[in-house]
Image (cartoon, rainbow, N blue to C red):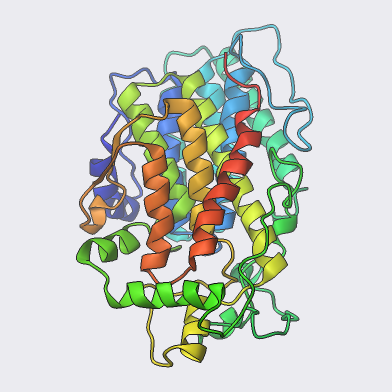
Length: 438
């Protein structure tokens, strides 16, 4: 497969030309791992270029795409267990006929239909890129396959996609209006409550206030891994709340160059990057490529990681709107320094817990289960933006750095960071417990 750094450094030109470089021709076009790798490379870029794709929405989509790829694989792989009856609301998928199938064609049809559905509203360039990818992968999948087998395989892949798309439409998160900002919002009142931190008119209401009610994949509901309340609001310098705010303030005044780099490296802003869940998906794809993973292995990793980051945002958002806590910039300007500025732009939704922390804790726990707790790696996610790769001894080290990046950016208090990691690990247990692999 084409190296990730090379692929992404060329993607702007690729989009403009609407032709996509695929994996090395020497790899069999009928290999579903080949199809997954190439579609997912494009999926990450479509997340970057689709306006409604805030981090919770991106994670949800990757959850459903992962399940689609997994079910397309499991249906033709002895020893793999379907997720039907295990994850919330997924009924048994259409069975295969007692006939021959081409697995690459099944996967190509399933992901082509799914990407078309989930990214229906991407811009014109993304639409051309989707069409180019579908054309090239479709042509390659058809090479050397007899017409009956090809037709049967594509019909089955499309049936898998249709089944999962229909399931996705019942979870409460399928329709995103106004980029996720409600047109009307009755904000809770109180000195500790969230208030807008942006002058943008659209962001005077918070992002996706009902996302905690979206049906999760593996945990029972959004409150399954709920957290205790944050430190009690107080403006008393002796209080825990003031001390947490003072920590954010003091850290901001003495940031090292390394801390500033960490804050920016993990910022993963929507519309500019692949978003935080996309960052973790990139890492998984990079490791799968290094390991030369086969299709069952790749499908399981993509499904587990997609589902856990999706559930992490549901759980995190449930807690965020349960407590509706104000952001550091609001408190510090009110109580400590009215002229204080953050390193990063504060996101437009409540503070506790940290979304970066929750989804990073969740992702790291799943990757620990899939790759081992001592897997070292280099994270080159932002090399195309001029940032050098960062080395991590293991996934927990990366998750901890991602979480702390929000303190360095001036965006979160300590409790939101530490407890967010805890919440993510709790959410991950439900995904790790699913029966999937051999």
